[in-house]
Image 1: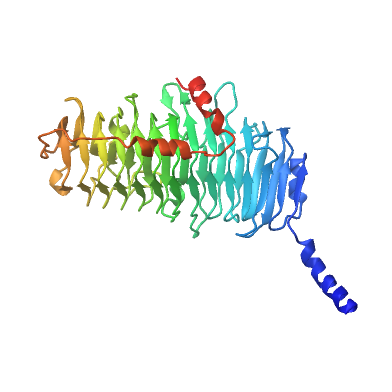
Image 2: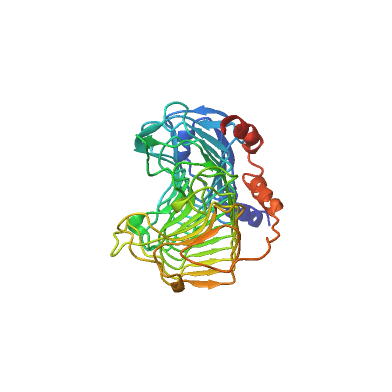
Length: 444
């Protein structure tokens, strides 16, 4: 019996050796040499680490992910010249600060083409103090691979060209990333002379060269505050994405469906606060759905309107403007906006193709001043648009004459839903406690 018991223990020893470990290191670069197993946790000792390259490599499981975190959430700062590569599956990267992209760093954190089902959470990404940089384009976070997540992070004060968060698509592979409950602010605007430079988006999903790839990403519950970099606060350049339950607060820009088809924009709040240039959604491409959104107090015009539907090019190149086809604008509430729904906006001489199959139905448009334009249709026959059950009160119309309501509708902004988005953005994150002071001290 003793021999049998000893043999059983010998058989069990390899399994016992695979048990999860927790280790702490003050040398972040050493992580790449660790043979990490499912369930392992590596803590980086508190401190400031500059000019370090971290490669977080491993393959966890759904039940036992591999975790790389700051020993104290927020206690580790990766400073100028530091970058992190996340490469593997079921990896969790959390609790770090990043401040100041170095000259040799193109990105703070990037996943690889082979990375899947990994999560970047509870991190703070901040631009460098000092002069604005227009010499090159660099991103805070770049997602590649598939089914990865960025959640409960803060993206602050990017003052160089490049997006705060970008998604690169792999050919013939659905990305399926989730971007949720993050906070974004980008109050600085980079110019060359008087012209605003392109490439200052908060989020860019895809690219013009692969705009017809099915990305199928979800962007939900994020709070965008004073994101003023350019007209595209979000630039959607891929197919099948869902933008739902986000808050855009006093942003001089729009959620732009720039390239790609079949995206849904649902249940978002675009609150201008009467701030000049604030906008809503710009539609380009096919089969997009814009429904159940609130646009309130927006002061933008033309492509910065509450809803703008752009004309397309004939035989467009991938980077140009595709015709709007079979778009649905439904059940949106557009309140006190200087320019409500603007259709076939004349922008450039090359924009010659009018929208086809456009449906505008069950929207509520309330104008508080006679000078506000509820709906404008430029140079096209409004009978080519499917109008149904829209309620319009006040303001003016151009190129169309829809029936107006006799009485001002009663409207109550769902403040509890709006506050819930603010509260959920970064809930439980180390940076949330400092957010109010940050907003008061930096945003004017």
